[in-house]
Length: 359
Ligand SMILES: NC(=O)c1ccc[n+]([C@@H]2O[C@H](COP(=O)([O-])OP(=O)(O)OC[C@H]3O[C@@H](n4cnc5c(N)ncnc54)[C@H](O)[C@@H]3O)[C@@H](O)[C@H]2O)c1
Ligand SMILES: [Zn+2]
Image (cartoon, rainbow, N blue to C red; front, side, top):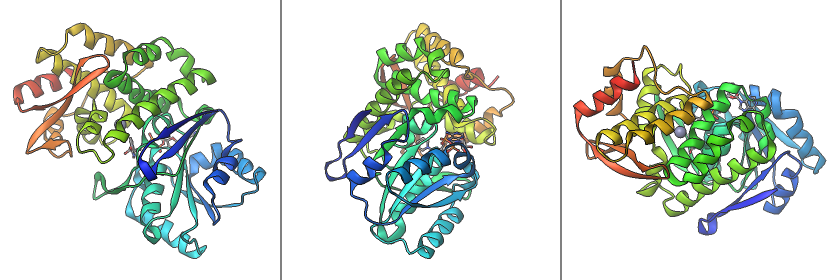
């Protein structure tokens, strides 16, 4: 088992990376959990991972309550939060209780927000079961829900007490979700680590075949890149924005596609857009864009989308949170492994890029 630390002073926490659920009891004991444990999960994860997870808890002498929500982004709202509060009140969960988020980013964001607000904050831990959650969303403490059709608009920064990654939990995940999660992994390489980018590019097949050591390695690098950035800028007042590489175009496409495309697929297309923009601005050579496209294609991710309205995507760009004084903020590459934040206000340039990634 690998252990990393997210260093945030008194809110620091470990990330455990392993190949089964066998150490979850030890992790909870180390945390000193004394009260009720409540596992929050969704119906897919419950079916695929619930039995093994419950068995590991029971083997360690823990008996947990369980609350299962319907899988999918549609559940990420205040209604679900309200149901969780009712459940917690019903079972008399108190300040010593601990929530466990067993699932992907949807479950992690919902559970974290419920934990942040119930009794003004109780402990929660993350047990991410998608590659996106293992690479990205379980670390860093962004929690929240969607509201009135706007993504993640209600939320809180609230760090988990630990993150427990069982890389073999990915074995039951649909392959399209694995690919989508790899988009965030590739993103980490482009923003911070050229060697990691090359490693991922050379090991796609091993990843898709669930090679345990490869999955542990990418999890370790993903989490250390994310942790390092969060340690320097927990609440996104500066540096943390580089994690949004590919997301300025990505989010705008995601909304315009009516969520037919997965988040990671939109980020994939968005990263190509950001590379093209950097190329047109003279920041990188075209071969950098080609290299990025190659690895995305090798992964089975899209580098453009059809049938999406360019004007709608353009409008969506201006509804996003990534605005600075009314101008659009893009994270653009200077090379593989290095990005910079740029305000771009050139409508023709933005539309030129959009017309190339949305044919
Ligand atoms: N907090 C953050 O920093 C952060 C970062 C990125 C994304 N997010 C959020 O994460 C969410 C997306 O997360 P996601 O891609 O993990 O989606 P998700 O949680 O909806 O999971 C994707 C699908 O896979 C299923 N699933 C999960 N694990 C499984 C397993 N092991 N076996 C079988 N099925 C499994 C789920 O039921 C779901 O149907 C979005 O809401 C996004 O806003 C948050
Ligand atoms: Zn993302």
